[in-house]
Image (cartoon, rainbow, N blue to C red; front, side):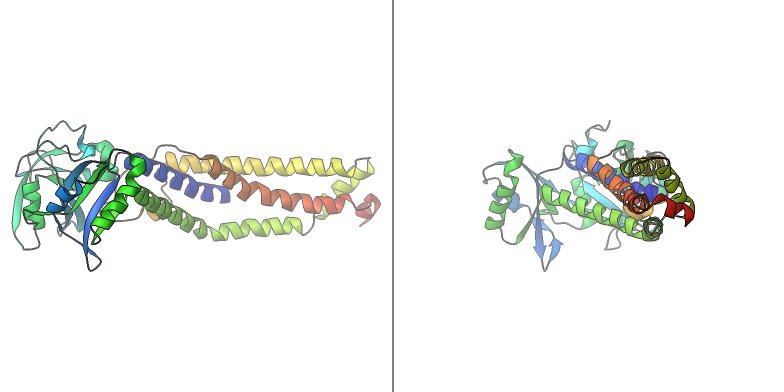
Amino acid sequence: MTVALFSSAVFFSDAVRSESKIILADMPEIWVQQLAGGRLVPLKAAVADSLKNIRGIRSIHRRIWGYWFDGATGAVFSIVAADSTLSGLPLLSHSPLQQLDTGKVLIGSGLAELRNLTTGDFLSITDVGAETFRFEVVGELPPETALLSRDLIVMHPKDARYVLQYADDELTDLAVRVNNPAEAANIGKKIDLLFPDLRVVAKHQLMATYEALFGWRGGLVMYGGLFALLAFLVLAWERASGYSREDRLELGILKACGWQIDEVLRLKMLEGLLISFTATALGIILAWLHVFFADAYLIKPLLAGWSVLYPSFHLSPHLEGSSLLFIMMLSVVPYMIATLIPAWKSAITDPAEIVQG
């Protein structure tokens, strides 16, 4: 059970990191944002024209997005603007809808479930100025994109400006694609030099943030299993402190029958390997079933986070060799040490003394 607990956290963290790498693979290499007082503020559209002169930039996509709190459900939704051809959002590349007109929206599965909305229904959105807008729902975002789109509302840029209160010459940020991804860091430095008041976020920085986030949360679950680990260490300490009377008598009889010290140690080593490998294998199997077939029911809220609008997603099986080695080192090595030390102490003791004592 100790192995299963730690393995579940390791498998879940590895699988989520793998999924995030797949998702981020199609993302732009650089994001450019405007800061004022350390906070994100609207960016002037003219900045995009200035960035076009930097060598190495392939394309610049002007993005408008923001958040909307729905008082009726208590959930926060993301509003994203897409142009009439939906070309700005890669997650809509497989959508049957080819264009999005004003007054029309695409919604994620979360909003559809909470509001019980289907195609043809109308969605009312109230902005910060208490003005209400009504939009016709023309489709639901593909289910395979639920990890990204469950809380998403996609609308025409003109509508997004009204709802989010952006002026005609204002944007949220810029998504920059470069010709050579290896040069993204250098291009980011050039943007920093030209526009010191802009914040440049590179894709590798975002990926590192995901790595740190899920690594930290996985460690949190492992620390949460500290009592189970302590129980395992107490068992190992009890084993290392000395064999029981029956264990020492067994070794004494073997030595009296002519067994050598190396043969006794080899026997106990095989016993320890059999027990520890069996326990580890069963723990890994339980963890695998728990994470990838039971949807990590016990630890998912801790690792994936919590919200009113919880993203539903299924993790694809993923296992890294380093993680498997870590699990083996955690379970097999301590038990083997706790087995061989007392076995060696008993093996070097005179068999007559063991049998008599």
